[in-house]
Image (cartoon, rainbow, N blue to C red; front, side, top):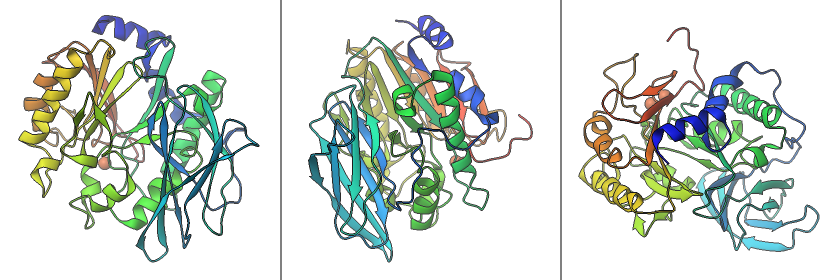
Length: 375
Ligand SMILES: [Fe+2]
Ligand SMILES: [Fe+2]
């Protein structure tokens, strides 16, 4: 598979990593929810993350829940398996629950609900990713960035709900059967506070996140508002356990790589960090090199997609890019033709094309919560 074949597949929408139709079309769809979206009265709204062919992390917030349980099974009315998770009391009224469901089969639909001692969620459904290395069928991802505005307009909620409507109309299937997972490209919040994570990122996405796993990327705004070392981010997301070919990220939750099907996803961190190993610099660069070297020799990886919040270049805010990505990381990514696409955000616009200096595609997908008058 080379880059030309990748482009044909993407344009045709018949296989491979199809994003273009999703990215181009959903903004002007009417409606805010679909028939399969489960909107009910329960206050517990699960959030799926770190999807693997054999496991899924499930997290949720409560005001004062003292236990963390997930009941799950392959039939909606037979949730006979129980996982006991953990709870972090991150602040008064901010209890964060996490549980990892293991022993799952790839490409399989599962039903589940989450519980605390006093509350029970509705029953939701998700689908596990294909077995690692799978190169047949289709693998589809919803890409969204810069969904960071918290306001009475609830823009992130409107957009993600309309994305669901568009996807289900377009593909004629429930969301979790039509798309494999969500890639968030950074600035999930405007400031890295409990209020913004719970009441923006998790709250506004609640009609989608119980069915479709999210994988976030560190943006500059996650480091604002007092969380410059991402301590809260590290509490909320369970990416540190991911590895690729035995290569573990020295940055833990701050940057990470994982293979799903025949695609390797590399989430880079374009920010400088108090702990230099977690941000831009030599340690992350060497890790990127190690990952690329392994992937180039790995026959089960046919495509590599990288994400970096600050983009390679943009036509607006020209100087506000990641020179580290452009000068130090792009030459590494380009060492193998398997690397086909880098996804950025940060600039609150949508753009796509091929880079001038490297034979790879580049998308800026950072317009989620913002007006775009021109550009
Ligand atoms: Fe942003
Ligand atoms: Fe940003």
